[in-house]
Image 1 (spheres, rainbow, N blue to C red):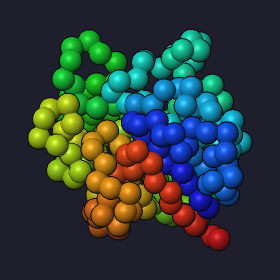
Image 2 (image 1 turned 90 degrees about the horizontal axis):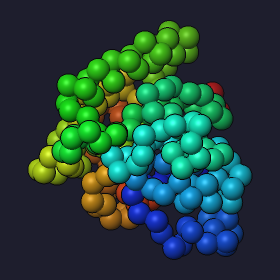
Image 3 (image 1 turned 90 degrees about the vertical axis):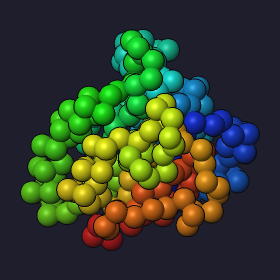
Image 4 (image 1 turned 180 degrees about the vertical axis):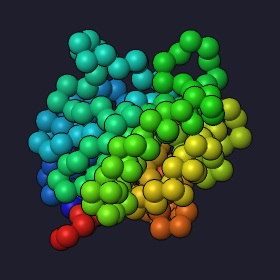
Length: 211
């Protein structure tokens, strides 16, 4: 399965009517935050495949009844675990809190609580399938991996616990500066989990279990 993952930066090479010809055979799109919803809506309509996303720290508070606070035709999976095209994917949006009273910004303690809310559905998945989740998408990186020294771009310690406990195949994030477009240099590992900085985009090929 060919996956297009995007975050943070609108790219002309993707924001064009020719995008499906230039990048054929995309099966799934994953959004890791801080992108205009019009951009996500363009991608989902152009490729006509599922698009799952989480909000970034600059995105508005999600409201399913407000067209300006959601991406039409896309699925916000922040704080959820979903199954799509044979893959189990979980989402955790937002960044470190550096401005008061802003949506999608969290302290380290608040993110521990949010991660805790995912434990039960992820445990249920593991009991039913006997397998780790395939992908976790987030806006921010784990603490100490691909993150920066300033508070706004500091990763979350709770993500380290989540990765070590469940060992997903992939943990994808944006938010911090892109390393470059060489996928290998954008990858770090914790155990069996590939942690990939996908900012501003990456293509991945993932084989669902059983195929």
